[in-house]
Image (tube, rainbow, N blue to C red; front, side):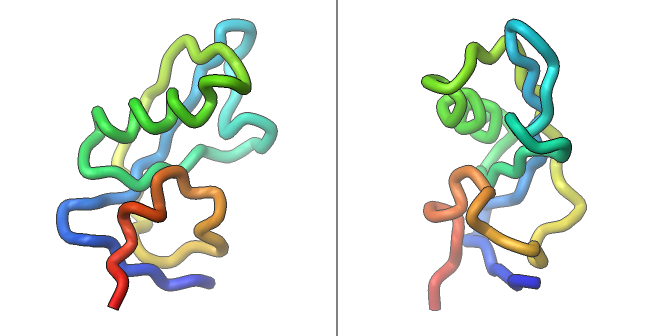
Length: 87
């Protein structure tokens, strides 16, 4: 497990991605896409931008993740670079 600390105002959101040709979660994987952002609106925008050249996104539904600090990896979290508090 990787323990992270986010900058003040940032949270981890999950994003359920709906593509125009199908409903899929996290692109190729069967779990939710995680997004680090300051609001649900920003999380939705970042998720859409992430998939912009990969697939046509029809809709994104975001919600606040219960898990905010412990993750198996941070590599798959969209926007994590901007959200990490570095000491």
